[in-house]
Image 1 (cartoon, one colour):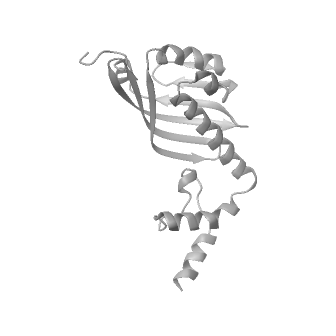
Image 2: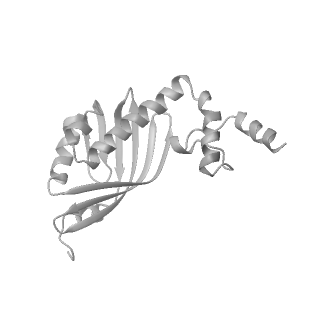
Image 3: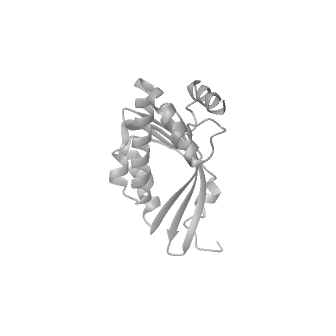
Length: 178
């Protein structure tokens, strides 16, 4: 009887707006249950919706991996020519050249990068992130809490908005105690 109820729940529509790794009914928290639930749900993610999730996830993951390595040339390949990048407290730039122009001076003194993804949610082509950007400079590690919204179409990032505290960002390049 419990198996029958579980099967009925898995056959009901499931909201797919909470990240790729979390498309599971609430009562399936364990990894074994999660894997079984995903096998039951995955076949329904077909057509345009599945393509959007795949395109958004693959492009986004490759972009973040390149950013962690500070490989801007690879990262900007995932950015649309007419894409928009906005640092909300600062400015908006367009296209790969604009992204490179903003990030090259910021990354120049950074020795190592780490983007800790705290929360990730997606709905179609839109990916929401809560992350902790960690940067190692000559004077030590600095952290910046950031919330981001990405929009991905045809495997390219068309919108990227970062929301962060400008005062905290300014302190990243300052020596400790400044």
